[in-house]
Length: 243
Ligand SMILES: N[C@@H](CCC(=O)N[C@@H](CS)C(=O)NCC(=O)O)C(=O)O
Image (cartoon, rainbow, N blue to C red; front, top):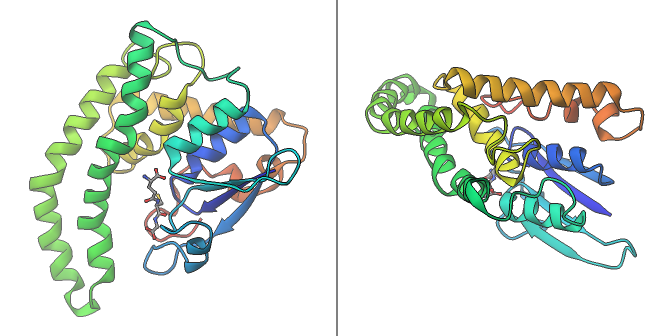
């Protein structure tokens, strides 16, 4: 059995989307961010970095003890564990290159810029003494505009140009690892008001796909019964950690 260790408003939303698409049976263990937006210490007991997502897999015989962190690794693992029958990118050509690039770009390039934006505009002001909060918010907001916003714009333009004539990042009829990784930063582009029209359509398409899946599913799984999971790919609560 696979257990997803899920932190609210986090990259583990990617894994819920993939698990639901694969139809893989899984359990979800939910962790709540602290008032400082950090993962709670219990997650440290699962893996030394204590960050989400993490999966544990006991295997079909319930005797295994795989513990895997890092969303890109988890996406690859789950697609392979499902027999590499769905969400597999083309093995050559531009689709192969695009999938390779965006699968790695998601955590390697765009997410670090998103984290910078969040640190300047949310994390540092939220964690400073309240007397300084207003002042710091103003100063850091201005610095962020100068340093981070131009970088975010470059990412937004790259994603928008790529999605101009494509439904999915690798260009095929189904999502691939690139999409499962890119959904989170692409939702953040929207959240930070820098997403272009094609990018917004992409997010909408995925949300509608998930809603249809939830409506048509007659199995009693996390997706249909747990309102938290149903809304998992939406970014409500990013600012205040509520979900
Ligand atoms: N590169 C890692 C990043 C993991 C990560 O930073 N997760 C965040 C959630 S989006 C987290 O657990 N933050 C809470 C904390 O740092 O305490 C991945 O893709 O899994």
